[in-house]
Image 1 (tube, one colour):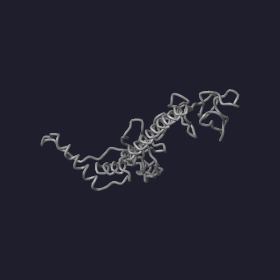
Image 2 (cartoon, one colour):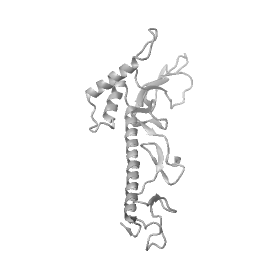
Image 3 (cartoon, one colour):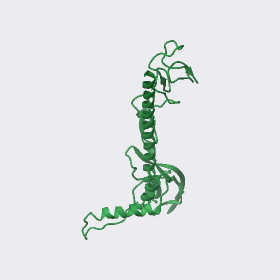
Length: 259
């Protein structure tokens, strides 16, 4: 009877562990979907990403028939909203994380006394836009540097030695690729037993590797950098310790340590 109860207990813990890891996998898939959705420019692109990322689709393939079905359903729901003829409905462009044309001021390196510098600002691409979650920010993942020339100074005074003088070329960054990245840092986690998951951008409990068995728990011990599996009772031959030396793991019954 005791062995049967122990077997049920092991099955229960395995079931719980499966559910925990299943939820984690679902969270990872959701995070990847949100990251891809931030790159979509149009609703049609968003539908394609949704169909390709749909967790109910075992082959992860965006079928044209599925897209048409979803589009028809969206059109049906949109028709329920009453919009007057005076109000204009336009197709939108998603303000997601993208390189966009931005005006930045020209920083003239040389000291200029008098005169008018042209241009005062130039157009470059900089990453901007919103991410699907507030804890993410739109950041550049690929950058090149541009030189703008000629930068000129106009003198309109009659006593000016040169009416037009060319200044040193202006150099600045130009963003060519962007991505939504986690704004949190490692010290954002309140406990040393937690680690920052950059893909999910949230703190989670550190995991033991290999995975703890049955009634063992994953715990960060004093003076340890990584958590390890700890038994509810002392392990024989370990001087009253509930855990094993570095590089070893307790067996399922917490009777001995091994690799």
